[in-house]
Amino acid sequence: MGDCMGEQHLFDELRIGSLRARNRFVRAATYEGAADTDGHITPEVMRIYRELAHGGVGTIITSFAYVRDDGYHPSRMMGLDRDELVPAWRELVACVHEAGAAIVAQIAYCGAGAGKGPFAAPALGASDGTSPDGTREVRAMTRDDMDAMAADFAAAARRAQVAGCDGVEIHGAHGYLLSQFLNPVWNHREDEYGGSIENRMRFPLEVARAVRAAVGETFPVLVKINSSDGVEGGMTEDESLQVSEALAAYVDAIEVSGTTYGKVKISGPDGQHGLYASYAAALAERVDIPVILTGGNRLCAEMQELLDTTGIAGFGLARPLASEPDLIAHWERDAGYEPRCVSCSRCFPGPGRNCVLDRP
Image (cartoon, rainbow, N blue to C red):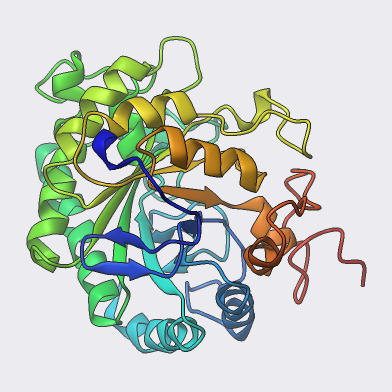
């Protein structure tokens, strides 16, 4: 994408395969905890997404939806693991489309950190071990497990397509199952799925191929990946670039993120912004699909500069849009507007409230 630089603007159309979004701003997936306990979309979910769509963002990536019922971690995640959920997703899609925004369903399996106790069986992960909080046994996935999981991702993607979503995003970041396969801290396998990065990326690539086969060649498929794992011994940036280049054969866009949010200050205009910009710019030079940068995007001028000087195509925002769902409309009127978000991570503190700054 490095040859696409020129006269561009943040409010130009963003193209991801057949998806045409009204601007380059993307609402990055943000966990709301607003579904019911069985993964159903609720009126509160509808309210949140209606506000985002009317607030001017071009593309909404939903909070992660689990692809099978043992694959969730926090309570009240949305689900895409069964057909009965599709009608409510259709209503959500219609709500977003009515306000002029596009919607992409993010699908995930939480892996070693999945579920809430008490448990009848171990969690599934890349290798044997214990969950991150030490409360649950983790069992290394077998070949049959991986085949079944890839099919579950594919079925969830197909449900999103049937519901009318404009695309689907495979969650391969933030320490969830596919990220665990990529990360040698979690992946200790001695078979063809462990060891070298070529082996560790094998299962994520199988999932991407299964999703692509399920939805066809023209339905937009995105993937979210860590620029690096942000932990000693984890996947490096060079390895991540290799993985991303391989994934580009099956997806229409790559969203770049990472796991260093707790280690940097990104609040306010004087914080650290564009956390993974150098990686995203390097990736954009290597692939012929759009690269979306997520993590610490706070100021219009900084994003415009990246748009002018790199091949980065889109910009994801999470917390700022939780605090101000109409932030993009503010920027359209005044590009110098400074968001009020301070990245306190206390988003969605209660029904009817997106931000802790919204006092009842």
